[in-house]
Structures are given as C-alpha cells and as structure tokens.
Amino acid sequence: MKHYKIAAIPADGIGPEVIDAGLQALDVLARRDGGFALDVTHFDWGSDRYKKTGALMPDDGTQQLKGFDAIFFGAVGAPDVPDHVTLWGLRLPICQGFDQYANVRPTKILPGISSPLEGVGPGDLDWVIVRENSEGEYSGHGGRAHKGLPEEVGTEVAIFTRVGVTRIMRYAFRLAQSRPRKHLTVVTKSNAQRHGMVMWDEIAAEVSREFPDVTWDKMLVDAMTVRMVKKPRSLDTIVATNLHADILSDLAGALAGSLGVAPTGNIDPERRFPSMFEPIHGSAFDITGKGIANPVATFWTASQMLDHLGEPDAASRLMRAVEKVCADGVLTPDVGGKASTQDVTDAVCEAIRIEN
Ligand code: ATP
Ligand code: MG
Image (cartoon, rainbow, N blue to C red):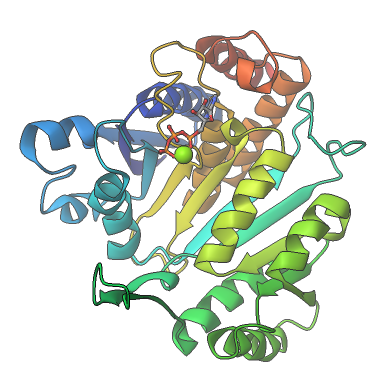
C-alpha cells in the first residue's frame, strides 16, 4: 500500500471548515480504494499565530514542509491583519520557496449549478487556466521616487524571463495535449506592451513546434474577457501571465457559478518539492462559523491533489461523487441551496461509498 504524507494547513476563516470537509472525503476515498493511505499532519499556521507570535509560520516553515508529498491549504487572511502581511507571510513563501510555477485552475459548470450566462450549462464551459506563478507583474520589482511630492513617480516592473516563459508554455501545451480537445489559447497584451509580451508570443510559437498535435491561438487579454462570456465553448486550455490569469480566473469562477466551487493547484511540475492545493476563495469571515461554507472547491482541489500524487482513479471517483451530489441539489446557499457544509460532505462521502 502506498502512503502519502500530506501537510494540512487550514489557516484562517472558513479554511478549517473546508479542509475538515476535504479530509473527511479523502479518508473515505482511501478506505474505499484500499491501495493508498494518507498520513496527514496538521499545521496551526495562520493569522491567529501571527497575533500571538508576530509570524504566520515559523522561520523554518518551508523546511518543515519539504518532506511532504503535497500540501493541502485552506485560506489565509483576517479582518484585523493587513492583506499584504498574510499574503507574504504564508502562501507566497511556500509558492516561491517550492518554485510552484504553474498555477492550475480547472473551471467547469457542475450539474445543478447555474451559470450567470444564459443558455450555458454543464458541458458548455470546460476550461483549465494555467497561470504563470513565479514572475511577471507580481515580481515585486519597482519603486517610488520623490514620495509624496507632486513629481512622484511609481514603477511596477513586470519581469519575464526566457526560462520562466518557456517552462510555463511547455506545461500548458503538455496539459492541452492531455485533454480531449487538445487546444491552447495563449493570452497576452502584445499590441500595447512591446517587450515582454512580444517575447511571450514568440516563445509560444517556438514551443508549439514541440506539440504538433495541439492546436493553438493567441488572444489579447481584453478580447479574451469578451470571448469567455460570448463564446465559452470555443475555449479549452488557457495560459496567461500572473496578472492576466489572476483576473481571468476570477471571471471564470464567476461564470462557473460561485467562488465556492473554484479550485487551484500550485504545482512544481518537476516534482522537486511538494505542490500545494487550495480552494481559490479566501477566508470569507462573513460566513465563518456558520457551517455554510461551500466545500466543493476544496473537494475539487483534493481531486487535483490525488491526480498529482498518482491516484487518478480516486481523483475521478471524488469528482463523480461531487457532480452527483450537486446534480441531486445538495447545495450550500452560495449556489442557491439550503444545505450545510456537513450535509454536502456527508452526501459526497456517501456517494463515494455506494458507487459501483
Ligand atoms: P480574502 O481576503 O482572503 O480574499 P475574503 O474574505 O475577501 O477573503 P473571498 O474568498 O474573496 O473572501 O470571498 C468573497 C465572498 O464570497 C465571501 O465573503 C463569501 O461571502 C463568498 N464565498 C467565498 N468562498 C465561499 C465558499 N466556499 N462558500 C460560500 N461562500 C463563499
Ligand atoms: Mg477577497
């Protein structure tokens, strides 16, 4: 039997509620499968720890995570802690420390969940957005000169490297190749931005030659937002920069019905380090403790994690269970239902147990 070491970091707000739900489903899956077991270690890192000790995680935090096969992450952020403190104090050190350069965001409309797009239902929207996760517009380079004075200048420099762009492009083409439609859309803004974005276009064309069976096209990010809304069926796999994909994936989540169903994997494709799996949503303090957080995004990312660990059968089984439960109308209030987090979790666990 295979044993996988999982680091669970539930962190803040509804994070612990959805991670608890995800672990219940994973436990039932492992028992049912019989071929693997998950050894889960909990880490109490997050904003409460910050308020007590001044740090969200210990100095050697990433060292402590190094030996794990995967990280199962909840959400970070608290109303009384500044956003940049929580972001740079926990999630980003892990993403950067483990060079998780591919941020992978599957999006589809699940049965029973309605899209704000009229006439668009399950099967009409089935995308994976690949977000470059290590450089670009969020490289942190830039500065402010003459601060506070009328002549003040602020710069925010986007950094694109040939190594960084080539590896994300290769990842995206390979992912597109593994999907039935084998199509990739490369998003840039190379009409207005003449340097790094033109390099993206050129590298896309170069890498595409390694994947003759994948069809691909280029889109400017502004036109892309329109295409996502007007022609969702025309898209399959999508690759974009850190900033562009950040924005596009929020739009994608909304088009798929709710932030509560959107998952994400922060992947180190070379498998030198553990990858990290999390729901896209944040800590959502407005619903924390009410027992109504939608656990579907967390189930979905747990399925991504199983796939990454090399358990594709269990991964598919989990998604089939989630789709069945959604189709049966066992839904939390954010997607129009009356069920609690635990109701949905119980239904998913039961669906896993009884499937033939
Ligand atoms: P952060 O600051 O970390 O982004 P947030 O509190 O702004 O966190 P978001 O996750 O961005 O919360 O979500 C915005 C709103 O969407 C939440 O306030 C909540 O009402 C709703 N929401 C998000 N995730 C879920 C979920 N899993 N289930 C139900 N509602 C959710
Ligand atoms: Mg938010």
